[in-house]
Length: 446
Image 1 (cartoon, rainbow, N blue to C red):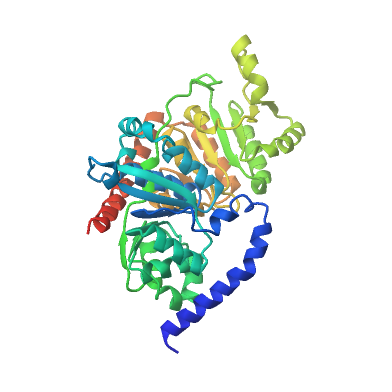
Image 2 (cartoon, rainbow, N blue to C red):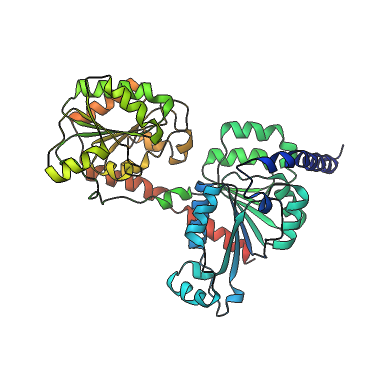
């Protein structure tokens, strides 16, 4: 059977499955408010570029692209590039709207452009939901938007979108492309499909990712680019709002602790306080609804502990110091990043069980020695060199985490050296946004 016939049969089956799924999707409470936009082409407008960003992480990359695309300005707004950005999740849409929305009044647009230099390169940025990948719907949207280029961020591979773009001669570029071992295995099972609708270009974030894309898309242009996420890493030096310890008090942080690893973290607390009691421990559950669990768990021990919300007034009004050996349970949201700036050593959670891990670069750039568990798949983009060069410690288990933390507490390194080493590493990894923007401009101006 010819490959074109197989593709035709697949699209018809795909269309049929969508028809079966739609009645169910319309009843889903999470989709109720967006179902109209996800199933219609009426609200779409013509655009030069269509950027698809799945959720918040990809939307951050989309904002970086828009803010760094520096097409030559035109005197007339009518000649400026127009961008369509779609997202699959409410978090992604919220981030895009917050960072890229334009004024609704046309009389305010000129002054807005004047005060927002980067965004002034575009007449408008239209932000909306990514539609369901229904073949007929996607084809109608492609015909209405008429993009010169579709940009997919990371691993946004949708069969109908890729097929419609190829059918109408629209170039598709995958930016910051990544593909996990598991995803690669699944895509290889349907390689016969993807090889027929492959994108024009994939810019992957590593040689390993690039090879996986080559296996799926044998005729596409596959190159390697620096990971754009490194371009958005900033240091945090202002800790004045929450510095509750003197600079000479050793302070350990157990941050972003997930429910699944609570027993492990409890064991770490016991070990580090037993081996190095002259410290204060900051405990940051990833989700605040776990505070009650930790209150009960800590109350069953001999450790002194306080909620951070309860000690603020005591510290600032009475100037009473926190006793050594105390565990501070953080029940206030959004303070972990600042707390890293006066931590001696920090364990970053979500990594003692296969949960993907959390951001272990944040404490580094604040000067805290950093240790994770072995499970950091979601942050593999940071590169294995960050561990082999001893910038971050990746421990095999909870006992190794505790031993490493105690070693650092006994002989803490210079914070400035930690910051310098981490920023040097980051600087060598930056430049991905520029590479991506240059490739986009190349295709748009061809």
